[in-house]
Image (cartoon, rainbow, N blue to C red):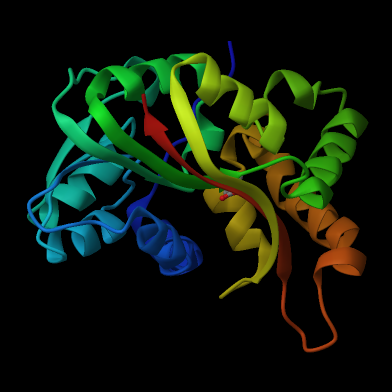
Length: 250
Ligand code: BEZ
């Protein structure tokens, strides 16, 4: 049984606000129209859901994290706790939007099938998430540091990063016509130290180590990542690779 990622909205706001800030190109690819019924899949704390609502859309956000949904609801949004791998909508949605969430849902086929069920014919599925090679340096460092402690990190890994061909295949199998799909390397400067990123996003790996070993684990990871991710200007720059796509339900 793998541990579950938990979200602390304050820590998220400190270390991860860039995630929604960098999501605007995906909103542009969606081209939301006033009055459209939009589902924000993996809406997190609702930062982009609010942008869609501000475009005049009728938006519902879903996320598996009760903490994030509480933060989204506090913005006055319609946001519901729901597993993206078991969506509960039927032909009522004009467009499904998703930013930086699908890599947390390893059952990609179940996600795509649920999105198809949710959409009306001709509806759009537009999103961006971690694709093949995403955060490879961080994954390697986590695996190495945990292996040194006798812990099998692969069994804990909550992320999946498909290639463009693999994801295109999944979309087509489930009755989508793919308008656009591309892997986009996007090295991303962090607003804070890499330890904040690790604590925000890699909790399932960190919590596999005994509590009193975690500070040592984090400093070991920092030192292992410094040569590749710490740049000459003194910034931590994470090796993100985005998989961005737009598809239409046939
Ligand atoms: C991502 O957005 O690619 C990502 C964020 C946190 C953990 C893993 C991947």
